[in-house]
Image (tube, rainbow, N blue to C red; front, side):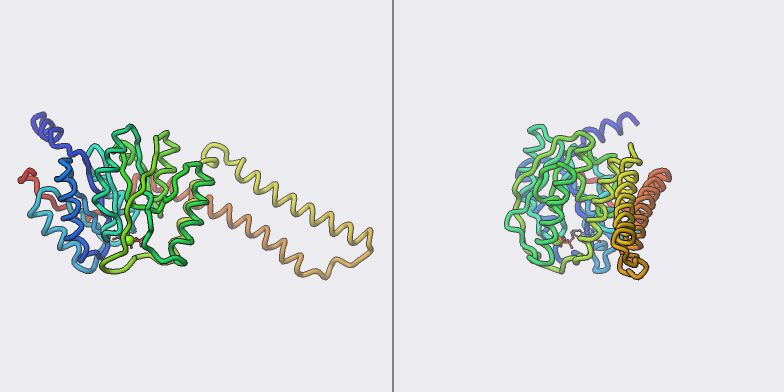
Length: 330
Ligand code: UDP
Ligand code: MG
């Protein structure tokens, strides 16, 4: 037992590189090669953890075969597609390195940037976030929504980094060990980490156009990201002071109701006009009330969900198998 522990602690790699993979079979050989050569050239000990997130193109089979024949790779195969955040979270779970670096499997992030991020961590940061220079994605469908999202996230979380959406990030491993992620939350890790008191910085990194396959996302993700943002935002307040959130919304809505009431009373009694025939006004009031209620319900449901997940300790993913080759030290 103690011998084993010693062996394990002697084998702790400097970095675990966590890669969520969905249908990236053509990129994978290039990716593994790029990570391995960069890190061994810089004499950084490492492990690569590829999490297959329900691929149907043979990525899982490729990863399993590789993991059997080389000792620097763990293949974690999820039971089905759970999404990038869940896949990353699975990767964090299997990571044993002193630092954790995440990047995309599609070679849009450049593994050659990893040593630079690690060096920055060594300067005493807990999280170093990549900032994609000359981002190679569509302008209208990707860059614009992400500009808006980044602006909103910056304003609301007070963590001033430019590019939340960049997957290439480096973390001190303690930081990710007990993060409870769900939805699209991986991009909010800097904000969540900031709440935990982490020291955060960013560094410019390279970005390339996709060489193989296609992006798994469309515009609908922007909506999901915004909803997650709202939840985080309200959670910060809600968890401590629910009345500050619901009370304020209630007051605003009440004030509007009273205002309209006063206006209508004025119209009826001072101007002597009929007010019974204003369907638009009724519609407006109905919409307002329903909107506020729906919003609050959504928020409550979201929080209940979260409490539910956390109280059950239920993971947001299920692992089918883990393949690694322990007998063949690097
Ligand atoms: N990905 C995943 N599960 C998903 C969707 C994507 O693990 O359900 C992975 C994907 O294989 C890639 C990364 O997440 O490694 C980013 O995905 P993609 O390149 O499609 O996103 P984009 O770069 O267009 O934002
Ligand atoms: Mg990509």
